Amino acid sequence: MRVITQDQLGGPDVLHEGTADRPSPGPTEILVRVHAAGLNPVDVKSRAHGGFLGQPPFVLGWDVSGVVEEVGVGVTLFAPGDEVFGMPWFPRPAGAYADHVTAPGRHFAHKPAAVDHVHAAGLPLAGLTAWQALTDRARVRPGHRVLVHAAAGGVGHLAVQIAKARGAYVIGTARAAKHDLLRDLGADEVIDYTAVDFTEAVEPVDVVIDPIGGADGPRCLRVLRPGGVLVSLSSPAEQHLVAEAERLGVHAGFLLVEPDRAGLLALAGLVDAGRLRVLVEASLPLAEAAKAHELSETGRVTGKIVLTTGAS
Image (cartoon, rainbow, N blue to C red):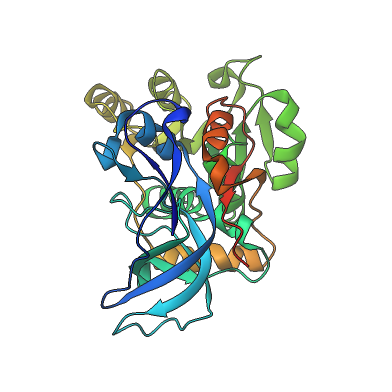
């Protein structure tokens, strides 16, 4: 089968097409013919620095949408021919930039009927990140005020919609050109972070979702109500940030997404109910993975980038 692999760490140009033996599903595993694979910032970081994957060679990618071709002994949820999507193995290697992947069946769910494989492939990692941050960590409920930074990005545009679906009042930060889009997705307020200081523009909130991290962490604490929650998605909350949060009577923590069948089912339900849209800025052939990474590194992507295998 085809794979997109790399022999060294570095820029997008280290990615190249190769071949590998098609895997066979083990007990409780399924073999999925990949139709589309989503690209995430963790892919870019892993390509450049190794990250969870260590040293090359390796095959990037965790977001998968495709069709089950084989099932291993013990699989009860799926049969050959089923359309599925998921985020298998994360943060262990999944090798989604390939024609086939194998993983435990419970790392997948049936693909939402309302969308094609391209849009389904853009949902798992970013969608589960937003879902787990909002439901498991922040426990968002009706009436909460939720501030989502980078609200037009991969995680952000999904977090806006999920928070809204849970009854929250949603505020998003983004450049002015993306404000109409965010309002269309359900944001109640939008803030141009290039023109104003969000700490002065927003009334106190119950939850801040921060996909960016860095210097904005301490500033995020300043907009939280007593008992509020800052969920950082880019890197573990530093001890000084946790200590400052405690001093202010709020909470700061880090979330690393994990495979979550229940979360996938919830996301699929929102998609099929018309309450969650996956925005795909670009869909490129698998062979153009390097070009897709170059686009991702511009930092100007709205929604997701997806690679397609040409499977039919």
